[in-house]
Image (cartoon, rainbow, N blue to C red; front, side, top):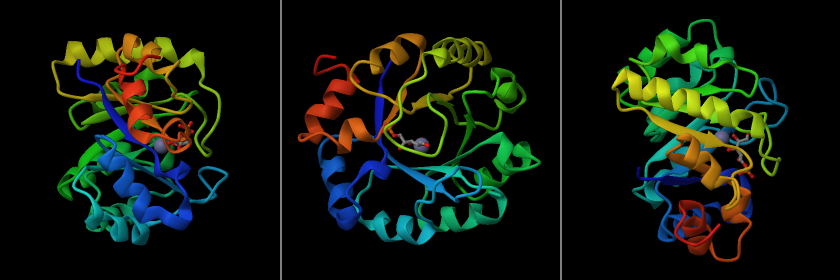
Length: 219
Ligand code: DX5
Ligand code: ZN
């Protein structure tokens, strides 16, 4: 299984966002993970579509936009127009996740469903035909630098089984507390896209940090 690494810009130096994007792309990042927070759905505020749009011309790697906003529906078009390749959202962020996923695909983006630590696997069961990605939160959303929740490992494994059974091409992403120590456990459970903020942007050598997460640099 090919493992992709998606550094989360939330942990980057915000005074040098452009250079940070270029640096992680040059260091081998597969995707750039962009955490959008509204101070309402989660207790933190990050940045919006204008920042995504400003960064878009700096690299060709896919922009993986993780929406932690409610409602999300009124902003889907803005993030698609800003250059998102993939837009993920939480079922709790609106009344009709199925419709939101249809909208994301109609806007020409890939669509993802995000499961909070307390959200059961069953929440995606009837969405697999509309999902290009399922994201398992391995922390409660809102902040970088939190500790990995071991309790989510069986959920990752259950989703891997569900995806395999479906015969569909759906990426299985993990986000929160991913380090060179927790990454192999997520990969063993079936994750194939790893989001990492602190473990990449907090490292002195981004390329070595990305390689370590991938399993190529120890860990
Ligand atoms: C948390 C965000 C994460 C966060 C991860 O709400 O969704 O993407 O940036 O940060 P680390 O890797 O530091 O746990
Ligand atoms: Zn995220």
